[in-house]
Each structure stands twice: as structure tokens, then as C-alpha cells.
Length: 382
Image (tube, one colour):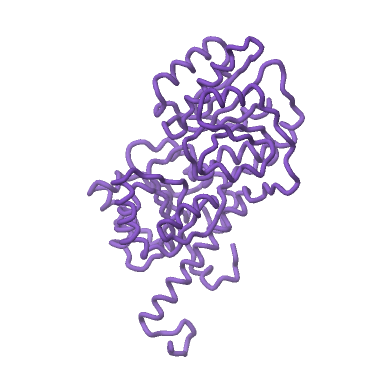
């Protein structure tokens, strides 16, 4: 944290507002950042909504204060959040939820008229017509309440510009252990059986089914033998996806299935697969890159930043293109100019705290102007 910032002494606590707390994205990033936090983790509150919060215990074990409430789209959940903010009186509120951004802002303002709000945008949210109109309306009405917007990649920054939002950039980061993995996986090589790795909770956006279909398609060539490790929850996936995983499990092709630590599946140097329809930046891809894995990813918005890494290949969203890439992909050696330090948890969390401190300073100056008082004792505001 930038200790020379005038607002740093006023940054005593942070409150994060999420949807459900799941083992993905920013929740995992908070866990990996816990050893590097500029303030004590028990002064950081993580709010999860609804009945499904499977990652809550992991965050609690890391020392964070975890609060679970009903969805803030409901009156009971909204009131619970207002009361929680009034009780904790955080120095800054960090909003992560996209779908309930409006409710989070309104609850924050109902609880406190002046607490600085920071909003991070974790993906490229392409909305259908009515949803896009609603998002623009919410943006026009409530963005003025937010001190700082933060994007997780340059592509997300560009997309948010369409809403008139100027964003700071803080790259998504990975756990320190992935940096230490690079040397061990580099010493491995492809054997007769090709190993592949999928990471992430199943959903239509993650589009795992495309990669699974492509693997089946490639296997029509009897010389293409493969095994798959799948790390993530399956309840959001399609029936076809589960059937295929069941089949491969019976055939001994599935080396892992379900939640778990994906670093355990990286030591045999699998090829990482990310067939998502869109991403914000992709923490799992950053983990693979940092660990030195080759990767095949979808040629879609949110993943173009990875083109500077020579061992990452982009494939169009068709089974035929993916199958061809699976069979023929030969990863290159990373350029020396490909900077992986941007994915450091220490750098990432300190960047956020600098943004928090800046937001607090902006809020203090704004209050000073409204009150006609100077921030410097003994002087009147001009």
C-alpha cells in the first residue's frame, strides 16, 4: 500500500459485496491475497448472498470476516445489508456484483451518505436489448455515487468506455504457488497420452461442452489418446456434459472431477483449455500461463490479452476448429518480454488498496468543499 497517501491512515476496514461466494474469480483472488493484505484480514468483511456460498468457509479460515445474508434483491436481504453497513461502518465499500449493482449502491447510500464506493468489473457483460437498456439506465443514475471503477483487463476497460466509465486497471492475480510451479512443469513433456485440464464451474458461459465434444471428435483418430482433469462444480453444466464426463470416468480418462486445487492437476504439464463464450480476463488462464502450461483458448472478447504469450493458441468457437487445434497444437516458448509479474497477488491487492485510499481521499475533499472547511487545520477553504 502507498503509505504516503494522505488517506491511508483513514483506511481501517473494507467491506466486499458479492453474490454467492463460490470457488472462482475474485473469491479465490481474495484467498490468495490474504497473506499480503495491507490491513488485518479480520478488518475485511466479505458479504455473500443467498443460500449457496460454498467458498465462505475457506475465506473465513483465511481470517476474513464473512457475513451471509439473503439476496439483496429481496426486502429482507436489502435491510440486512443496510444494517450490516451501519454496524461495521467500513472505510470503503467494494461492490463486485454486476446483477445487483443497483441494490448494492442503494443499500450503501441508505446506510451511509458518504462512505466511498469502489466498483470492480470482472467480465465483459454483453446484454440483450432490454437488459442493456436497464444497465445504461442504472449507470446513468448511480455511477455518480461510485468513487472508482476498476477493470480486470484492458479489454474490459475498453468495453466499459461505452458506458462512459473511466476505469483503473488492476489485473486479476493468481496464488503465489503457481509461480513456483513453473519450473516443475517445464521439466515434463508430452507422453503417448495427451493430458488436458479444464478449470471452472460449469455454466453456459464457460462452454466446456465445446472442448469435450472436440476431444471426442479428435479421438476418432486412433493415434490421439487423451485424459482430462476437470476442476470445478458441475451443477451448472448441461446434461450432455455430465454424460460425457461419466463416460470418460468409466473409461479411466478422467484424472480428476469436481472441486479441488487445480495446481494439483498441473504437474503432468497438461494443455489448459478455456472454450468460454466470453471472459473478463480469466484467472484460471492466468494460473496456467504463470505455471508455464500450454493453453488453447476461445478466440473471443476477454481473452485477446493472452496473445502475447506464445504458448497460448486461440481457436474459433467450432468443434472442428477446436479438434484440429487439439491434435496439431505445438506450444512455443514465451517471449522474454511477456511480463507475468502483473499476475502477482501482492501487486494486485496493494493496487486495490491504493485505489481505496484514493477514493477515501476524494471523499474527504468532497466533504470538505461541501462544509466549507479546509483539510488543513487552521485554514478556511477557498
